[in-house]
Image: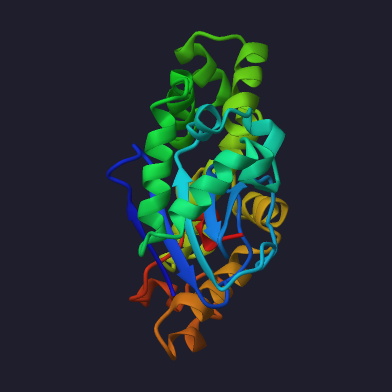
Length: 265
């Protein structure tokens, strides 16, 4: 079971919870997550490719997924230092502090609420996140080129790359590819044909879409649609998900859909 909700306490963040076997690999989304699993506090850094399901063992996961570029200031670590990593929070913060936080987390019936309060409390003692990050992410999410985004924020290519490494974990070109993949995944989950997914997500053509899926998600759009339908569609609906053109029963699902790294560790 998977469920998520916007956080009313942490701007732009999503609180999520998963129980049972993971539905599939964790795919890049440009975000970082604070995780509570098995009495442990962990951080999932920004991903550049798929991470295997079950990379962090556990049967019940709670997570707080931060908007792109907002976690490094709270954690006190540049995002690129956590790229493609899952680390104990005690590796980033003093161990006695993390131990006390874990004891406090154990008292919450809803661990997600505990993660929200932890993040809000920490944010009050942390430097604000780089305001440039939200502008860069918004521009790239809307399909603007890196050059156009750089012009809007008033930075040269090298400065933009350096600030992006700190905020997102990778440069703006990679972030743009990841955010475009997320647009494509959303369209694929709705059961649209691959050619339409490619056009609406901003790929040059269907072959470009397939290459990027393989590079960032480790699969093809058709295989993703089938796997998603099998994992999240209503019972019995996955049988019609094998349309090679990309149509899938996922469009008919009535279960909550995961987004990005929320499928969890």
